[in-house]
Image (cartoon, rainbow, N blue to C red):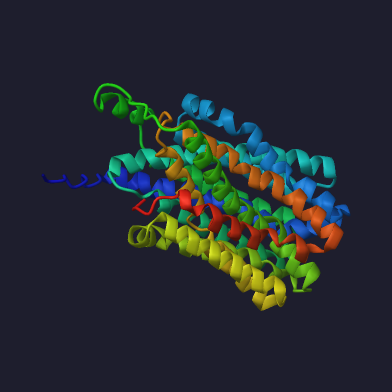
Length: 400
């Protein structure tokens, strides 16, 4: 028996792959330009740590609120159009957050930006999976790596803007125009036609869709464990998003430009981990890679918090970013393969519930910071690594 090699991608498909990569890159870069500005916004509005945590949670609240509606919008507009339109509106919302002169306005625009980001996330992943089906092999991890690369560029742009003394309004207007323009340009090279190719292929594969059956209790346990793994990844990401710059600047007294490097280090290491992820999983399996990542996260950030220094903390965030790089793709893939569920059901549940990490983490860390200091609040990062070690057994040890 011979296995047919995947077809060689056509020029249209190659251009579409570059276009989707650009959409992921711009999505990562846009919000990353705002994150290092949060300490300045917090100080300008006179927010305490708990209030700050409750304010920034407006972004994931918006994402959770819009998460289930995003699929309907994508089906109506098409994945490429929805991704580009969402990017344009997200850039506007981020600019509004940078210019906010009241807590209420800041909460409103962060909520809006979060809702739009959820739309972009669903749309760009849908189009990326459509391109992947045309390629006949896995390429989705490379798109997520480009998202991390965009976040590195965006965070570095913010650090440079602060070092040059550029105001938030001018800085975020420039980044918004650049990346929204890049998304519009990418739109011309996305795949034409409809987005429901996957459903047509499933229906033609044997004529009927088979629903695999398994023990309900076991399925429920595995699904919960996968949500925990995905949430662990998002909690660590949020620690870099919301607290890395603040911890380095306020607790460790790092200069503003240097304080931004905590977030940059996390997403840069995450980028490297995602670039290497497919190769590592192919050699060692999802379970082993996840457990190694959990250990790296727990030990790396644990040591950084135990002996706090600016260089050590930046390295700790880098270790955490590398450790969680493959967790969300692994949880999504495993959920989509669960027996006993219709195709896509497990993926939908994990994708939506993992946003709870972004929703619950900021206020919990903020309350812990007000009660015992931000250093204690950031213990959520090594705790996330420990949870991965405990639950990674539900992951398979086969190639992604």
